[in-house]
Length: 247
Image (cartoon, rainbow, N blue to C red; front, side):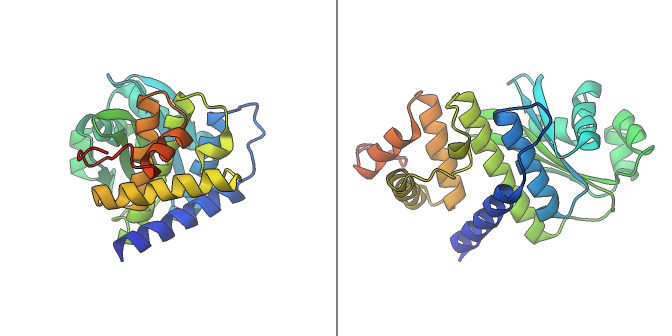
């Protein structure tokens, strides 16, 4: 049942992303793709804005993308100040869920960031690290005007969006130049069937969700600088396993 729920969340997220128009702001490539993901996440997660910060391993921001200009400024602000939920999520490798930025806990933990937020309309922030194994890629941060905890169903969907962001960033770093593949929208039947079959095999081998299986697949392809379909074929042909038992 857990796997089915995960698959449903992936279908919903990818469907919403596909519905987003391509940004007409002069950007291109992975930036446009991540912008569409952010805008779809705003709708799916009932938040005011979504920002993605891609970082180096030592926490230096390489670039930021967001659903709109206010969210972009908020995403950058944390790393400009050197404090905030996004910074902590990256450092601790764990989600940081702040239900009330005006609370004493937030003000004590991030005094400068909380003070800056007090002047605006954002009152809750939920930050999710983007990581594959030991490799850290950045953070995805949700900004909400209302205080209060995040709904468990929304939390699960947010984690799915974080997985999609990780996939997209990995594809961008691989410089594949194929936007459709970054979101799993390739129309070649053989490619789709091979990757899907490989996903299912990884899911069984590692006991993870279908989304996590795809992330493992993409991370392995990136680490070996190989096309995704070649790695998928090795898995399907039983030349490669992810559970350490060998072919």
